[in-house]
Length: 254
Image: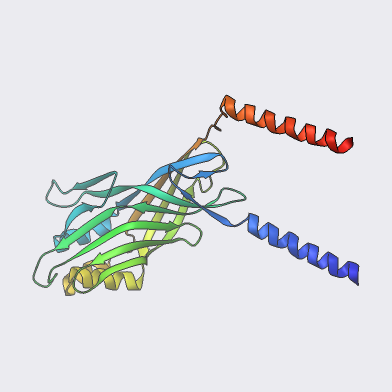
């Protein structure tokens, strides 16, 4: 019985140790290190054509928000042909045992501003910023800053992801690109868009036709970190320590 109890305790400890070793690790971009690698990267959100058409209906004005790396807002033809924003990844959540990227968080976003347009909008504003892409659960969270009483909503579940292709784990030094597509808005996200932008019947109807809001391309660059070489004085101190241990051992032997 004693042996059995010891075996159960040992097995439980082994499982607990395994679970602990498999715990997700949050790695700060640029400054954090995971398995001898430092990581940095960007995430680029690109609006779908269907969303661009809905923005045209509402005559929505788009501007960059926060610390974006770059942004493209092209309506040179009198309507939107391209809207995208590239934000820097500030942290990654990685599975410790296999390097699978569970989520990536970015900084910066876009602000959409609407002015009164009969039957379309009463006016308002909506900022979508600081995305957190949850690859494990196929969800996109964001900070929302909305007009018309919405206020600031953090870690807000905005979109669901239909498809993830490309690299989903960091296996060593190199560049890893992941394509995230088929962003469908949640029901609460839709309501927040409507309220923030003050959408009326035509504006709400145009937004309701958008089934795919766009894509996100994630690019992670992993670089091997070179271990620091100890100064000569460090080796000298180590040597003195070993000599001291040897002398103590000899005294005990006598």
